[in-house]
Length: 373
Image (cartoon, rainbow, N blue to C red; front, side, top):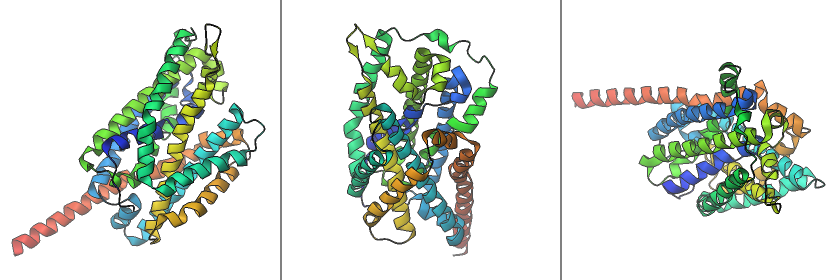
């Protein structure tokens, strides 16, 4: 790992960008129909519980990444297998996010540009940032955080000023009961994007004030969840249920409808900047976790030697992950993706239990040795 430290504020900003990431691009909670916002809200609450679990595990090994202490918890052989599983998971998700943003840019404005070219340019930018180090990524997040809300708040005001919001599109609330909402929670919003916070088990050791990891993480997830919930409310209110469910990029469709005083329109370029920032940080965080985990696991002195080879691997994986965007979305929302998410995101619960038992055993042994001496 790098010999660097980041502040609590920088961690907070990174989590905000990470949670927004691709969640704003593809939309959330579609399976719950007009109650999608409720599914997102419940996903946020579940995400807070998951992060609290991750944070408790991190506190047992505050100076080591997940791929290191999982070997201490499960033993060298099984621990290395689990560590490799996490690295594959992080690489797979980073490739999916890269594909999300490549497809979005093509649909948005670069219709005649090959996906490979768009993805290559994004990959090169992200690889350069990761090569410069995690501290650079954290400082960049701190720099752009103000821009995030400088774009979001006026956009929200303009949507209201345009008279686009029709809250009747949200009614009747829970028309089909809680079943669709809870099904969407279990199969979608609990894992994406909130459960993906498991990647921060690789990054929390960089935190300068380790006692503030809990408050930073939970407050960032809370703010992100509220933002995503409001976004779903606005999307459904503006687009209506039918268009919301059929739209590839619901928020883009909402922004494109803004028209104030017959001249203030076509503001979707600002929306693109907003989303590209989130995508950049999400891909970078996952990719950086892959690099430092691989370097630690296979005893590389410097992770930077792996940056460009793994960048090419990431690009190729994002291109081959699906033959088309509909297939990509189908794969990302199918039952198979639940299994891909559920093991790495829920396994820390088992690791926490084992770590707790091991700590109790060590304390008992120390107590016995003290009494004998």
